[in-house]
Image 1: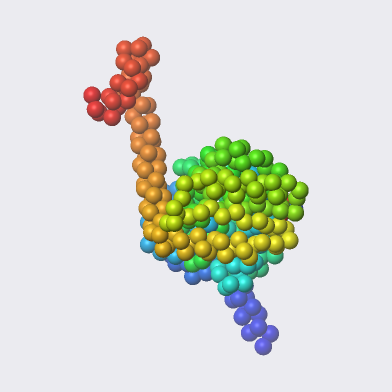
Image 2 (image 1 turned 30 degrees about the vertical axis):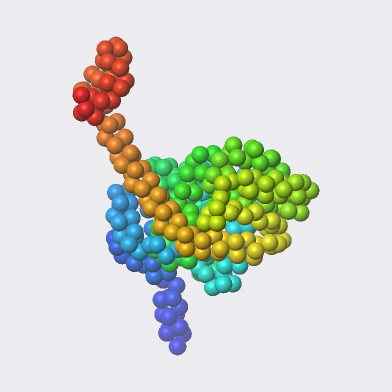
Length: 332
Ligand SMILES: Nc1nc2c(ncn2[C@@H]2O[C@H](COP(=O)(O)OP(=O)(O)OP(=O)(O)O)[C@@H](O)[C@H]2O)c(=O)[nH]1
Ligand SMILES: [Mg+2]
């Protein structure tokens, strides 16, 4: 009896062998095996000769998840909001995955470690998967790796994928060129609306969230934001950017925020914008892939004797940069 119990216990706890074959790895990850999903994502993130094959196999399995982007200045309450959103979405029975992207962190440490602690209450939940990405994914671009990680999560049947990044630079904004609905979280202390427009946040926002509404000055920012979004050109077919007020740490306004996201998703589908947006993202991705490949082959041509000679000619001012480029492209 004891032996039988030991054998069953041993079987239950024996680690599943994670296959290295791309197809087997994907099958296991998509069957709900978290260790396989983690391995799959690491492979994508570290980019090796398997990456292309993995993406090729993953791509037909995707297209069911909703991808939401969450951005805003550091400390605005993005992770707190994500944490609350997870709780509400889980109550609706949705499977939720989170990608926290921190381009400034070399080891996905710092703030993301904090996020892990904050989101610990979901750690026992098999239908929540949280992953952070740092500069490790920079080969081929962090935004590119993020897109492919999202593909893996989509294929692994997560209903909602939340992508969190601090909106402080172009890289961070580029990362969000995969999200159907982008929410920009602002706080009273993040400055005036002019500054936000300068940071490019206005162009990418599908909705604004005014978090820390408990703070003084919240009403002032609310007035400014409402006025600013009202200045946008719009007709009855376009999306009017809403401004939601939240206190994420107390879960105030988060349910309402979810309703606004749901109505944006509905509008995207009804208006045909979802297809348009998706095609735009795909176009950009194909161009990115080609540009990266082209750059690689041009770099290697410039290292050959002929390439070096061309650079010498350029240096001696016998030719101009445009001529050199056309010669390289074989146009002259
Ligand atoms: N007063 C107040 N504090 C809040 C609110 N929401 C979040 N906070 C606090 O603000 C701090 C920063 O919150 P985070 O969720 O880590 O912010 P973040 O935008 O993810 O920060 P980074 O990832 O570092 O850019 C935490 O101490 C939260 O508890 C709120 O509505 N009111
Ligand atoms: Mg955060």
